[in-house]
Amino acid sequence: MFKLGMVGSEEFNEGVPFWTPKQKSMCNKVISFIFDSASFKKRIPIPPYGNIRLSTISSIEFRKYDGDLIYVSGGCKYGGPDIWGEKEAKLRQVVPQILYPKVNSWEDKDGKIGFKSRNMQIAEAIPDPPDGILIDFEPEWRSDHGLDRKMIIKDNNETTLPFRRSGGTWTYQYAKKIGKEAYVVVI
Image (cartoon, rainbow, N blue to C red):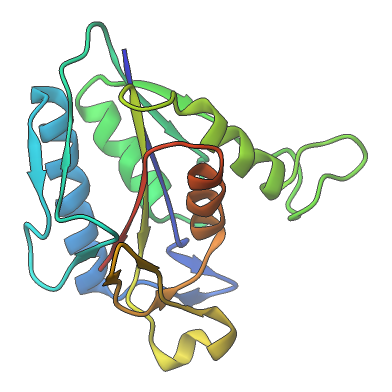
């Protein structure tokens, strides 16, 4: 069994689009490419398309694994990589593990799980290396995203393009903190 987790910036929120049509199209191509690579257990060179940067390394290598490929995500109701990955998983008959929040809030409310706890569950659902990875897809930062949302990661002397910080970014950082294999893909 191998678990492939995908998170990222929602497609839109309160009518504001975070992904341009070109970025959305490119992200979907990369997601499809990643599912192909995971299914065939081979190395993924990044970037396979255009102006994409992967944090810390230039490729992801899917190791040989026995059993099913399982897709883990949070089922974001605002669209984005969670949902785009779900569609790809369904097309390929990949087993889904979708972890939904129970309230529309960062924090838990009245004993119901909010986005923060759900994001922790996503990261914790990914097995330790080499049996799973988490990938956070983020659109390159634009001035209309707001300065409070601008983020750059420096790791192993590599720097990502500036990107829009999201709940997916929080999940990526939490996954790294608890020892999971995790990456940010900026499109």
